[in-house]
Image 1 (cartoon, rainbow, N blue to C red):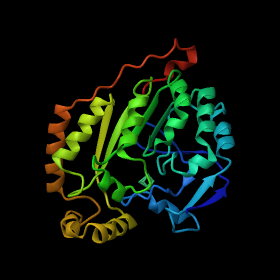
Image 2: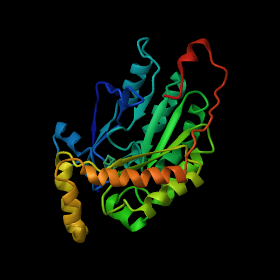
Image 3: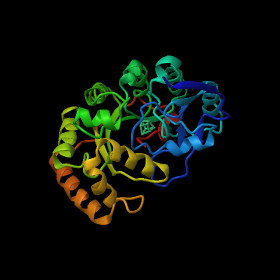
Image 4: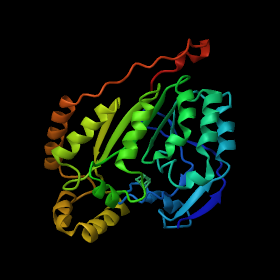
Length: 294
Ligand code: SF4
């Protein structure tokens, strides 16, 4: 059973300076994440806490709702998109108990804050009505990370996250609203989930569920993630250990592998093209003209 440690934060949203991301602010309610993905890229973030147990010691920012309102009600706040949970999943099991997301979403509705969010949990459907309402006012983007169509592999890779079926169901439900829906097929891991069959089935199922876009990315093994992940492979999938390790002399997969995989993905993307949907908002007030889909 994970331990929840309540803390106070100074600010809710942190600024991100990136030319590549479609948002400048990131809000994380939790530090640490119970989903326990074997490839977790965020374990480094616990080094700022007095804990090295990223998966079982979860820090909860108890005052984040008040801090968020203070930030977004300020005259200086430019109503740009807030990415919710860029480091850790906002709908991890702790959220069942703390119920912080509904309060954040109510503020987004009150101050018309555009939102993007990705999750691996079906707990997001608890807040369906709030997202639905927000998406009639401002751009809302919800993505689910789905890496495999094999539930046994999913249980190995992401033991505490929702099932594949539940994650596709999230997308299906939100596709009935004004929400822009996406699938994050990441990380694609050599030898584990990179087969043509797996990737094409993910795209096909996304299309059947009216998902609007897909983003793919190959596994990166930076910092301690490399040791953690390779130890997991050695333990649970020992027959793949040498093959996977050979692709990761450095933190990124080798160039020949990337070229091979992009070839497969290009073919699949042409076969199952996903379509951005047209989203209609109510007639804008003068100040709302700046709102756009990221
Ligand atoms: S959901 Fe994201 S933050 Fe949570 S364990 Fe998985 S990869 Fe890490």
